[in-house]
Length: 238
Image 1: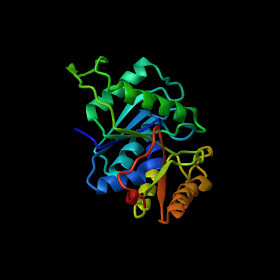
Image 2: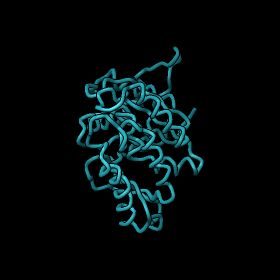
Image 3: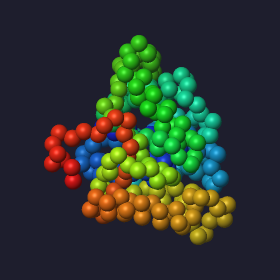
Image 4: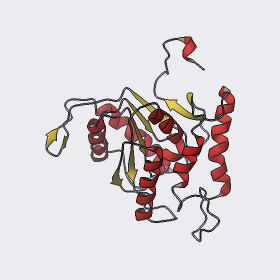
């Protein structure tokens, strides 16, 4: 299966929190989108890896993605080395995405910055034909995504461009709240965490509303780029 977009996150819920509005919009536009989680989030204070697996499946169904995979890297301890790069390269070559969305270039959680650089490096290396990878004993063709964009997470990074997600905020929040063990729940008996507060839940909406306000729409999601963002015509800007 070839994908138009592959969204990669260090943890299940990274993608939903940061770029699920964009994903939902592009799926509605007929694009094929997949999600790749690098870890199962097993170091999370609340819930269990098994619960997180179920929540990730539920969120994927809400968004309508074509595929979701998990590489099972060690939460908190994966590194940007050959073995981890090759694991991601195999997925990139398997699905041949035109665009990869990945973690913020820097963030509060150390896995986010690590995941960002690891994914970026894997996207480049995936295009080198002398790196051989196989799936089910079949030699894979090299493939390099045309674009790698980094979404924004905990830290308020100034975006290089924003995507209008007006009309897709509801489905974004539904996909986020599919992670019932992680986010705001007045009935939960689990320990409180920075992301389980009502303030954090509200921040997802007011960040999208604020980015939308800046470009004159209701809601938006922001991204940073690795090279200049280009348009064919100045009229392409909204």
